[in-house]
Image 1 (cartoon, rainbow, N blue to C red):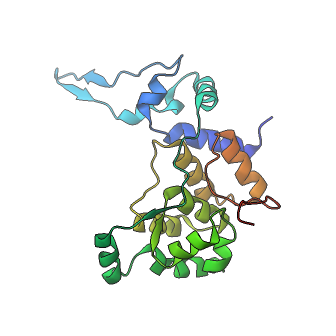
Image 2 (cartoon, rainbow, N blue to C red; image 1 turned 60 degrees about the horizontal axis):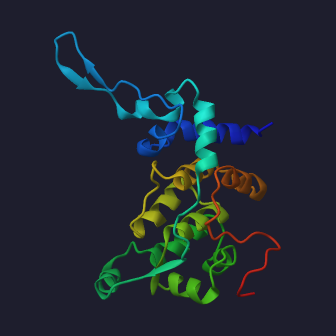
Image 3 (cartoon, rainbow, N blue to C red; image 1 turned 60 degrees about the vertical axis):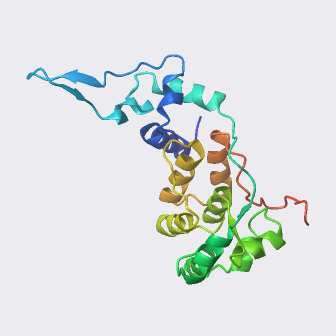
Length: 214
């Protein structure tokens, strides 16, 4: 029997996940009628959100199929290099990742150093990220948000400085969004939610787990 928070995640996921190409390709999915003819004879289009899994009679079966067919292919590298143009722009920009990171972490009684210790990012690369020499990839920011127990607004602010947002057509983003909104930061509960949806690419350091650079 699933834990209540997993059941709540499933419900949240069915109501929010919006990769309609992927959803509609699942066996048993029934495409809703989106084009309707009004009494005046005009054709109108209904909200595409009606295509989400929660509106299917067999939603549980479709969701299970999606989970079984999912494979975490999200990019796992921890950082990306900045162009010379970007570096020049960052000198004048007050809202870069490295400039707002210490403030965001202070909201949760963390420091740049303590935050880095929670991630499986090599210390030398984390130092470059913290100094603004390179920018973190999305997986790194999401892992940081979960391990440091950030608020949704702070997580979104950090993502925005790197040009990212939480996207509803991404399995990873929807699950992480749920964890942040519901503030599910307990390691066991968090990891069960990630495992339920096959999310393995987040650079989160587990307790007692060795890393290549230890």
